[in-house]
Each structure stands twice: as C-alpha cells, then as structure tokens.
Image 1 (cartoon, rainbow, N blue to C red):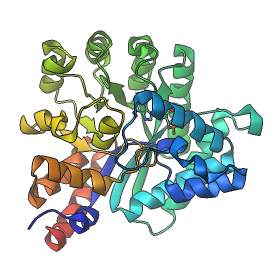
Image 2 (image 1 turned 135 degrees about the horizontal axis):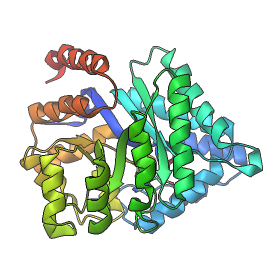
Image 3 (image 1 turned 60 degrees about the vertical axis):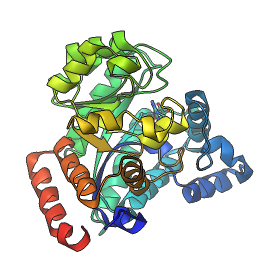
Length: 346
Ligand code: 6MZ
C-alpha cells in the first residue's frame, strides 16, 4: 500500500531536532500576538507561507521577531506547553526539544527563569495523559561568546540534576554565517566531561575547516543538518569519511533546507546519499512553525521524493530510537511501543 497522509500521521515518530521558538504553531502565535496587540497580518514576518522559499537571512529575521513575541515567562510557558501538545497530536512518542536560554530585561525574564519555565511546562505535560516523553537540550548560539556557552553548559548540568534528567544535551546552533564553531570546543568538552550529549549544527552551509576541527576534537553524538559534509558539496573526503566511520547520526530537516535554499530542490537533498549508503539518519522538522511543516509532512516528503515504502518509513522511524539521548530503558520502552503499533498500521 502506498504512503499517504493518514499513514504518516499514524506512524509513531521520534523528533530529535526541534527548536522551541521555531516550532510555534500559527494558532499559538496568533494568541500571543493578540495578547501583545501585534496585528496578525504580520504573519509573513513570523513564518514562511507554505511552499514559499526565502533565505537563511529571512529565517533569522523571523527568529528575532518571534523572540520579541516570546519575551516573557508566560509566553515561554505557553509555547512549550503548546508545542509539546502539537507534537503529541502528530503521534510523536519521544521529543527532544532544544532552546537557547534567554534573558529579556523588558520583562525581567532571566536565563534561569527561562529554563525553569520550559522545565515546568515539560513537567506539567508529563502529568497529562499525552503519551509522549519529552527531553530538553540547551542550545549555544554561535553568535555568542565562549563564556556564554560555558554558562549554558553549567545550567544544563545544574538543571539536569534538578529536573531528574529531563535535560540530556547541548546543541550548537544560530546563524551559520556568523561566529566560528571551533571557538566553542572548550564548552563542548566541558559538556562531555559531565556526561551531556552533543547535537551540533555542522555544515548547514559549506564550512569544511570548522566542521573537520569540531568533528575530530569532540566527535558529536549527532549532527544537525550536515548539508555540506560531502566532498562534492562543500565538505571534503576526510569529513565524509569521518562521519561514515564514526557512524554519527544526521538530523535531516528537508523543508528547512529547501525553504532557506541551502539545498536546491527536494530531489537533490543530501538525505538520499546518506540513506542509500545505510548511514544513520533521522527525519526532523527543525522549525515546524517557521517552515510551516510537521513531522508527518516531512516523512511524507521523504516517501514521495525518494519513493520509500511504508515498511521503509517504518524502519526510518524505528531506527531513530537508536539515536535518542535517553538511556537504554527508554529505548527499550519505545521499541516495544513501536512493535505493538506496527501490526495496526503497516
Ligand atoms: C541554525 C537555527 C536554525 O532557541 O530561541 N535555529 N540555528 N540553523 C537553523 N536552520 C534554519 N533554526 C533555528 O529557537 C530559535 C533559535 O534556534 C536556532 C537559532 O539560534 C534561533 O534563534 P530558540 O528556542
């Protein structure tokens, strides 16, 4: 049977690359902008219209505006709560949300109250009957300094303890045209020293020098995007071979890459290369709000573009469990959930 919308929705899914402020639905955004008295005909400034392309610069302008809307702890609570409900409704059974701790003097929100608010919303959702496990990754923005990055790692260590392990890792993200990933290597090493996992945006645009340096010096647990790792598209043979040899899973965000035009067309997406050589890949949304997509939609696009069957989509989803940052008990629990559901949907 062919893959359709209904199948992709029913498929149990793992989402490992979702930026909190990029994942806000249109309806949550409308509530927040109404509350702030911002006219909603500003929509094109906060999210891309479906199937409209732009640039990475456009996306980063949007994040700046979104941050103006989510500049207080009430808004941060609401977006976290709503984003978790959105993913749960789309049959995501395990979600690793990532977010950059942020202070906003205008509302007296501090990085500490920011992280505590996100954790409170995660905790409140856990007490509902949502059938989703949520973990948190704290993000380092590459536009910031090493000191800020080290502070983020310290917060992750402290709040992992306080949250009973909800925080599982550290991300590096932000505008790939700004800053240098290698500057943050001491922070990545500090995170590893404390047993935190690393999910780093690497090679979203061609950047072979920093990519190879970071890979060799810290070996991240997952790579975000990895658009330009391959020799023929801005990487080099050492990078490609290292990623293959170390089997570093790639977080694949197709609509994001096409919309920001870092990849020209779904047919040319690097997912095909890595999938065909059997490299670990996990399908993700990146920013489901900004890019007007969903994880079910991303699975459907993969199936339609690369002619994947139901069984192959199932395997993609099932194998993603191997790349989560939680312990083996959680993996086993998810694997048995997937097996129970399989007979009903494939
Ligand atoms: C790099 C990205 C990104 O952290 O405020 N972010 N970084 N590449 C991308 N591809 C399009 N999409 C999102 O969520 C928004 C932040 O996530 C990062 C950027 O730093 C952005 O400001 P949070 O929840």
